[in-house]
Length: 354
Image (tube, rainbow, N blue to C red; front, side):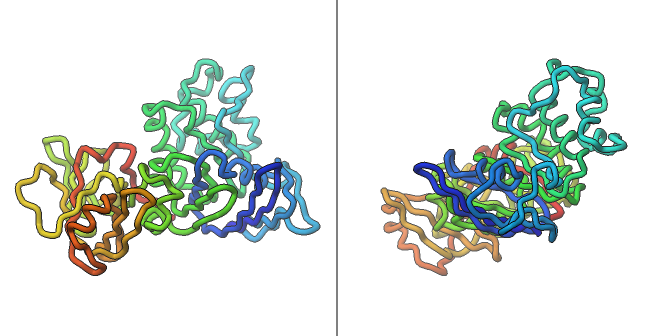
């Protein structure tokens, strides 16, 4: 368990955040300027806030009268810029982490072929994998990752994400993962801490927070979307993977997974269309059945409808006019239609063990 309570004031900005999180990956999400990096720097001991209580695995790192130095906190920190030593090979950079046998970490991150290279000859994704390895070899009690994918293009992000998932699923080290990209958060995190203007507006399991219509203004209307968990049923020759999910069957672009593997699929609210009856003659393959469980009006012409499907929730973004024309009521049966091609590879990922 991680316990974090931080209060700190700058000129024109106040950070006041408190949350608890279980083991696994806890994502710190928010727009630029929300206070994400300030928060993790306080956890790392790089910033001494006005007031703090930070506890990791029962060990107090900061409290009234207690302030451990960064080097005494047993925290690994992976920055957005990897900060490898340019004059050292990958092997020597890893050894600098202080660990003994580098083999298990090298194998997990797939960097054995990089050991004799210099940092200047690594790609962005390779550089970040080495930085993660160096942090892990310091034998940390907690791993901080401050937007480690932000400087990578989409191809490099998809290259490194499977290694981060493997780290999530095989390591017992809790991770605080800072990001402003919902697709990364939805794939990796077990728990989400949502920041807005220095305040924590929500904390909880990733699927519960992302599917709460009241939080859409903080998440961003265009990026709002829920996470569904299903099991892979089949891979078809036409390039689609079939997934059994609450409310029905989903067809998404083919991805690598074993039959039966539990999988997360993020569907953006703006890609969902609603129908009061079972739709006929549509090109869309994904039709999920549920009931209207909440409606959140926006400030403009839009609204967010939450659909309950056997305890799992999906969001749909519609206009107020459509809402009125459909005469939607709480508890009413509804069909949600999502285009297969609207689900990008970055919106699909295996379910973690946390």
